[in-house]
Image (cartoon, rainbow, N blue to C red; front, side):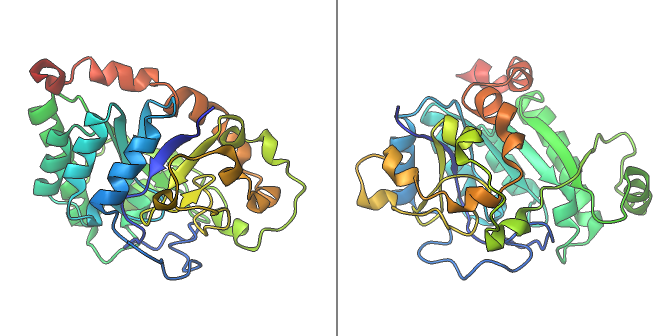
Length: 289
């Protein structure tokens, strides 16, 4: 079975400082090679991705997609390659032009990581203004055909209500805006690879033979390995990815978060999830195709 490339990282750096994320916590070494994915790497990654069975490709990993100057063109190429395109953004550097660009390119889902945006220097009013522009443009350009998920990773001592009270200080805050609150993974704990006797074969990344391609072309075994501990090969050195390239899994023995992927990979990435099928019914881009 050919490996499934379910993440193609567009940008290897981030403008946010999420404490639970290795990138935001400052645990990652300086990236080597391309920080912004090149046309050459994207083309090769999509060529290899077509050998797999997944229907969805995510365009974020260690960094913020809107930092890439050609993010709209990247989305377009992913869609033209036959995949649905999704990414998560903190929306701190988004603006109406960039939002319009990715919507017209065919982005299938945008997750707005609100808590990440609040760790940047961007004023909260600007972030909410960008979010309102996203909803407005999605309706105008796509008939709401792009799924939008506004989410917030709860920090220590934070509750849904305490966050809402804080956010409501913004003049652009809409109390009817749906916000999905969640408890973040302890991503940082993987830095030291503490042995918890976790069997890598229990994880859906292993079971489904899935992997990620970083912005410089390196191949990582899962979305939790921001550190690159698992990297053996680069896509520019090979003709196709085989299972032997995904065998460096020492990071897995300390991962207590493997069960999070039990539903996500097989039901939301390898196949198109129902929630995306539903919004795609109304997508005006489909009528133009």
